[in-house]
Image (cartoon, rainbow, N blue to C red):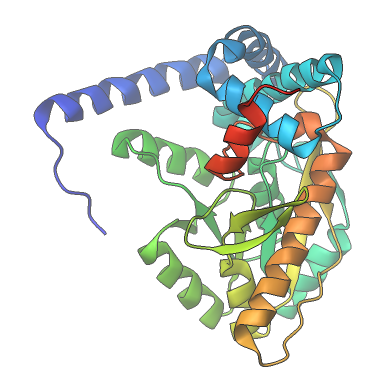
Length: 308
């Protein structure tokens, strides 16, 4: 859907932001990738705690790990900013973060090879772990035709540049979140293409399912697509090894019951996906994006209230 024309001043602001994006991207591309990654880590560990997102991350850790001590929570907050800053500075260089570039180790690659050989679509699911762009790069490198979902940037000029960055590492089929993107995903699977999506953000129109012992609203699209097309759900996760080097894990398909009771099956499937995401977060909590407001407003209010 075409965007409506923005007011002149807003459009000018967007263009200036895009110019800044261009300047930073060019600077990063002139640097060795490990240097750019380390710079992002250093800067975000300094400035991240000064933002409102730091409070969101802190409260999220309190909700997920209520018995965690102050020192450990502080360590994980620092690790989260380290990882997040690396991702931001690595983004323009993702075309170097591929299996063929030697910076990505793939575990379970035989599952991707089998999917590519079958020609049948699957639903890939994951979360905001380490550098999430690596997952899409691995899927494409395996020869799988796949529509990757993404959240379009508010700034349309920056959005185009981000799309171009993704195309440099092979992702040419992008579906923005929203009504039009949902139609594109249906069309993709109907035509034998796989889809890939992140499943760890709050979705107010979604399905409530447990996450760290609390119900959270979750997008059920992955389960709905899998049930509609009889496709397997294949979870993937990314781990940061050292600096700008990663391990991509292709996990066994998750079992989604199809009893014919649509709402019950969708709720059960969403619960399975949330359990997968939670397990990965527990394994490497410093590499998940705690800056997302995953829980409800009431949960965050509870976490922020003084403790006896």
